[in-house]
Image (cartoon, rainbow, N blue to C red):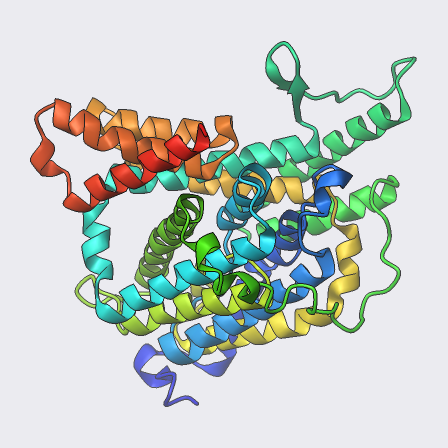
Length: 457
């Protein structure tokens, strides 16, 4: 084991790698609560929840996909990187594909499987580098930042911090609950909003103090305080057998053979968006974590093909299990900071996800107020990419701005993505810089233009 994971070469040992693996798990553990909450439509009205998979099955799929993906990264990629269903991709799955585009969740899983299959092919054939070079940097950063704002907006909405308003579309929620004449549901909403604000402040302080598992600890503290004030239910038990995977396992297959459903303009946009976001998220995460660990050689990632293949296969397996795209997690930097340098760190993290399968009753404490701080702060981290955009160049800034602002305002990641990819080549051509636009961008221009034409039908 020491030889396979190159302990001597990397200057590490079992103790250090084990501590790093547990640290990475704790930094990622919030996804075990947040992903089932989002994919099951738990924050949506009761009449819409029937359009989403079962909460318990998604929890099991999430834990298994994270375990399998992380173990693949351990043994194939041999990197100290954990994998799990990605934030942003699960929001796109829930709120754009199923809610807005009204695509059945089973068909959406088929789209995830297809996008990850394409990702695997691109990784194995070496086309990945060419695609990375084809997409302008500004749009890459804009997509990440826009998804961050979208996720944060969902968090604010779920917590009741931001509410609907007939006059202004949205406004600040109510935080007082002692006025005369208030209805019971208004009082409860105000208390939950305050609980979410408390959780947000706790988590911000933990993150500011560089606590590795800040988001996870923040959720636990928020849930405990919620229990004290009667806003969060106590779990009936702590340990039990994992919820059945039957409702989601293999659900994607019923659409994978239906070519008329898979190869429509609507599904093409879904697959491209899943592929695009996962492609650049995985690339940035793998290079970033490896750089922090000091594993890059001449700026390149060793065994990069194996690492990206691990990411793609994990996504395909996750789709079969019943969850949105599984991808590399930037929270892996917490384990690297704790000394993780080899795939053994990922091995420990993967085993922790398997162990977590037996603690599903604890998900009873998951409420919108508990998950909202995690969504908001993940949004903050993703929105930080805004600084990388060339705001001084309007032909770069305007397409990026459209991408960022339209994601939360239209409640659709695909719409923001499409707008940016349509406007970018137009602005460049009119400025006389047509040659600066990669041919692939012109192809994507027509693809996303077809998306808007479809939306108007």
